[in-house]
Every structure is written in structure tokens, then in C-alpha cells.
Image (cartoon, rainbow, N blue to C red):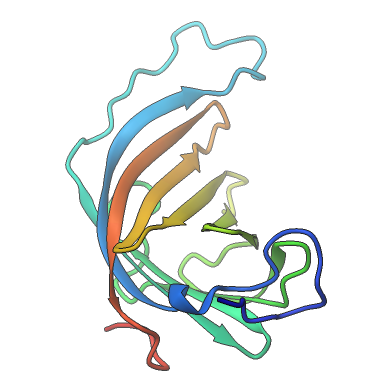
Length: 182
């Protein structure tokens, strides 16, 4: 089983495995908040986990295009909810397991994003900045399984004081057919 090469060979995953390409559907639910220990002084009244424990849907599709990787993502809940049409992040060639964002079709659009590839997983990290100076950073980690994928989604809050995590799984719906799912 060979990887589709997107760049010269380097340490780390050099491209997507062909069996990863396709459309996936699943759900995640709130797992926990993680306080960021480098905040000093610590807040006098730490936040408690008040997030909704109700699972919500996550859809994604992976395809190889123009020597890079395109990730289409739709999240139906939580603070990182996407528009109904989802978002499309196009990444350039993978070098040593990392690719940079080339273009995005999203609302809001990330200021910067990276894609990381490991032998059995893929991750995206995107920074969204707003006019008022606030931001949030979203990470989506996908560990592939025979039936689909295990998912971890985490978000830094706008204050930068904690990260919240959601966990779940997705099933593979179909191999890539040249378009994002509708």
C-alpha cells in the first residue's frame, strides 16, 4: 500500500493514503475543558464546564487535488459550528508531514491553517481572528479506523484560558467521487 506523493520524500507522512479519500459522517459530544496552565496569574474563579453534552453531527471529505490536499468540513454545533454549506480548506504540498493553507472557502475564513499527516491520522489546525481582536483556534484530529475514523475536536476559547474538547467517531460513507457531499 503506497501513499500518494505530494512532495519529495521526507520524514513523516508524505501524502494521503488512498483509502482515506472520501466522505465521512459522524458525531462528537463534549468531553471536557482543559485549563491552560501557562496563564498567570490564574483566574480567581475558574470556569466550570457548562457545555451542552448533547452530541452533534460532523461531516468531512478528503480529496487530493493539484498536488495538495483539500479538506471539506461541516460541524453542526458547538462554538466551532460551520456554515450549513461547510468550509473547504485547500492545502499545498506536504513537506515532512505538514502542509500550509493555500485557500479557503469558509465563513468565517481562517487567518491561517495547517494540515499534519501521520501514518494513521490527519489533523487540521485553524486560527480564526475577528475584528474586535478576539480569536479562537480549532483543531480537528482524525485517526482512521477500518470502518471510518475516531475524532477529537478542540477549541481554544477567545480569552485563551482553556481548551474545550469534543470526542466522537465517523463512518466512511463513500470513496471520493470528485465533489464534496451535499
